[in-house]
Image (cartoon, rainbow, N blue to C red):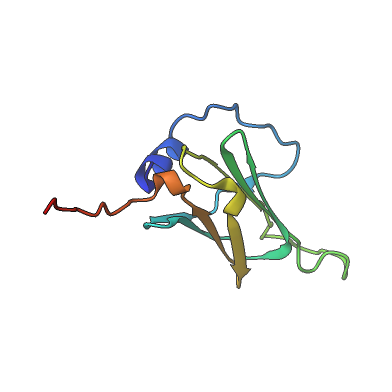
Length: 134
């Protein structure tokens, strides 16, 4: 398991069919994926989303990130002209074996979501001590 494989799988095929949505178009948020000894870190830019508007789900090894953008001026007057429309965020990733899904956690500040996916103990690199017989 490595971050490049996840990025390549995300860009390629999915094992589960894309879900249909009967609402406005979605933005695919840009995501950086970094791998270290502890696991994977996904950093997603989702400006305009409140913390309460984010949902992160893992089902059948599919990670789904959604962010709902509330329109800032709705209900505060009559719209005369609208050239800018808000859209929600939606991104999916196929997770590989070796991720400890129960220990995943996320932080969200100033439009940036940081999701940490720790490796399972069996997937972490280990140093093997060399002993001598004397």
